[in-house]
Amino acid sequence: MNNKAITCKDLTKRFGDFFAVNHISFEVEQGEIFGFLGANGAGKTTAMRMLCGLSYPSSGEATVAGFNVFKQQEEIKKNIGYMSQKFSLYESLTVRENIRFYGGVYGLSDKQLKEKGDELIEKLGMQQEAKMMVGSLPLGWKQKLAFSVAIIHQPRIVFLDEPTGGVDPVTRRQFWDLIYDAAEQGITVFVTTHYMDEAEYCNRISIMVDGRIDALDTPANLRQQFGATSMNEVFYALARSAKRSAD
Amino acid sequence: MKQFMVFVRKEFYHVFRDRRTLLILFGLPIMQILLFGYALTTEIKNAEIIVVDHAGDAASQQLTTMITASKYFDINSSTASDQDIYKAFKQGKVKCAVVFPTGFGNDLLNGQVAQLQVIADASDPNTAKTLTNYITAIVADYQQQVNPTANIPMRIEPVTRMLYNPELNGSMNFVPGVMALVLMIICTTLTSVSIVREKEMGTMEILLVSPFKPVYVVLAKAVPYLALAMVDFVIILILSVLALEMPVRGNLVLLFFESTLFIISCLSLGLLISSVTRSQQTAMMVSMMGMMLPTILFTGFIFPLENMPLPLQLISNLLPSRWFYVIVKAVMLKGLGIGVVWKETLVLAGMTLVLLTISIKSFKTRLS
Image (cartoon, rainbow over all chains, first blue to last red; front, side, top):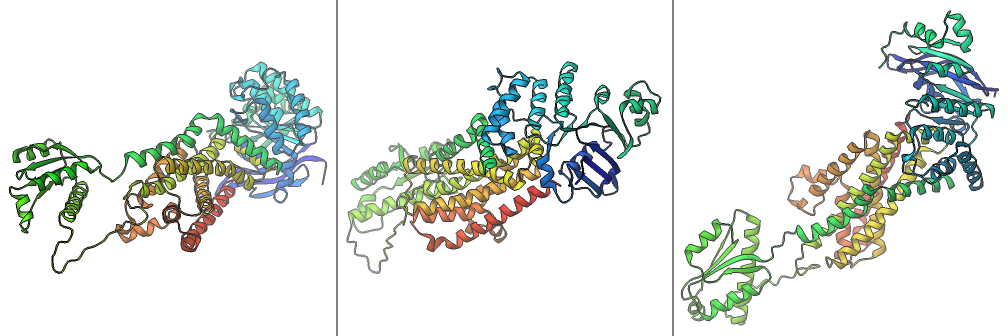
């Protein structure tokens, strides 16, 4: 048991001859916002799925919330939240029903569900919409709601897989306010993104190229290291060396 | 347990808020039962017939009246000539014709062999055969009436009794088959589509990342549909008793037990379909088309299994519906108990167990 939220050592996922994730090692501190960047096909999602217990690593070691990804998947699941790039609430359920369902699945009591639900709806300013079907809400609202639902059980770590895809800049900004909020409550945030301005919001970021982690540091240090003025330049400098085609 | 109930409740929300699901759930069984019960039967009623009466005596007229009175025939014309017969057949107006030769009644009274000609349109052999059988039966009836103590030496008189279904009511054969068909389609379609929908929407991933065990996901999906399928079964049962006059002679509890077994096997099949398909449309196609045809072909309620070549008979044994059909017929129509259908029940239970195990296994392995 250690205090790191996530530790990885030589974590690898092979599909036949293909190394989707090739011996990656890194650590994430509790309460940190950790950006996990990389071009499409670089292996971000595969790495994240291994950490969430959705797939077994081929080799290497990793712990999430202090639990071993090979042996203690059940414990890991209790301590993490997850939001995928696909929108992941039920469209034919109302806002409140979604909250009740996901909270219920994580074993919250009726009283907790009520309190948490009220708190969440108030925080998002959705009092009017609480009884509306989620399918009828605008995308930005859905994403914010999905994030809030993903951390309703106060997990130690929340994994966000391209959470802001297709959302307008204003909503993205609001979304990041929610992320900061969560981090202040001590929740570790592990986030993948395509938007380089979002990378700047992270405490530290790693950039994956062809299944390996080619850079890992704070945004400021990375800019300095690559002599770049923005994360965009850093990313291009690294992505240019990629051999895999982005699909 | 509470998590489980939360999940089940969510599943019911889905069902009752989706018109397409509701239609499949409640529209389909009602439509199928009525369709198969009323529209699609092998029985022929009110077939158009021509009678050409060259005799014009009491006997021929009495026979004509009997033919008219039966529910099987409608007289198209009783005053036709020989030429009219072929014209009517060519135009497709009639299916059958009866010709009384001159002296028909005389021959009969004088103890000679009285002949009458029955002509049928054999371009549809089954109908032709059925109609001529009806006529023969009516003639035999008449003969019995006019001459009850016919003194023919060496006479064999077969006394036929149609057990369980004296009126040869076609729907008796169909309804148990339609029950199997409807339950099969509803269960496989609804489970496979509802699971594939979660995959498509991305909610499945969230569930798999949650502490809710995959096995429970499967069970929580199955329980609501099991309950709904039971409701369907009750609807079908009530409809067939009230509208189609089906008897329920056997033990109702046994009937429910057997259908629960069958429903679980169908749900497992749906689960299996969901783990090999990626889109709701494919899942729907596979469950509806893929299941409907084999069920119709190999259950035995339309095409008798006994007449099939051996390889096809062997294939039919792999279908749970084939066994369920035999059981339902035995329990509903013949009033038999578990003592008679235990073998079929055992086969069905075995299949259910195997299907359930495979489907849960495949659901789990898909994850890693």
